[in-house]
Length: 280
Image 1 (cartoon, rainbow, N blue to C red):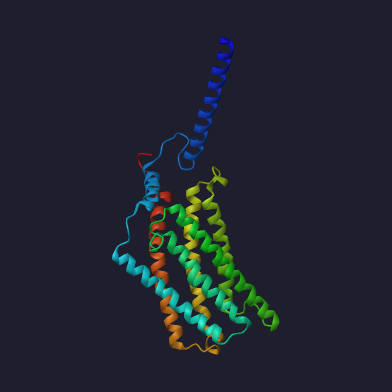
Image 2: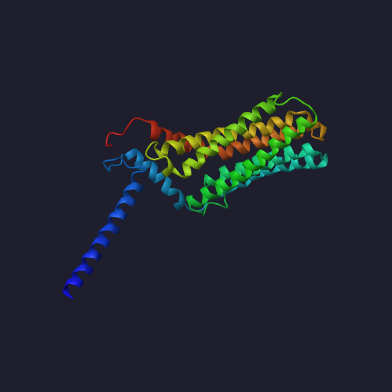
């Protein structure tokens, strides 16, 4: 009886030691995502992590922030509605190109950026993890619509035996679409940094994705704006005044959306690529 008791006690001790070791290994693996091999964290990385964790602890947006949120959404929705009215008013197969592009860029892609920055009024209560989920879902739908719009213009060119990518708008659009999918790839890696650690520091991928996302958003809005300078615009009933208002609306909306991400990315680049702190 005593021997059986000793065996049971020994087995329990071994199992407990294994569980503790597994927990320590898991914690160490998680910590190494940002911590060095010696376990020390420099002040610059501490500031970076603190900035990330404080995202979910913000209070409700101020009246000014709420006003800017409403204004930004109005500046985005108004030109998209205008483009949709023109497209459906003179409906042909090609009309699906501006329809998909305007909705994909003007509503989904921009809202994806706006939601992850935490300034969107609807998303301010959500923790950063949930905002990131909304971010990639909206981007996935937006990129899908952009891809459909791209296929439509290719098919339309083939049907009418016209040259492909012969205008500045089409050339800018092709370049932007390629960069968009490359940036989305970095986004997948940024959301799954364990795939590349320790070969590449996760913070490098996150900063690269942020820089690429800002650049691609600017290019997407520029492509949408240059689309109003094509023959389709006037053939569909668009006016010079409407084109100018669309330009101004998308320009200022892009400025409001990207202001915080640009400042945040500059700050993080200084932390990551700046000189090491004296206490590291």
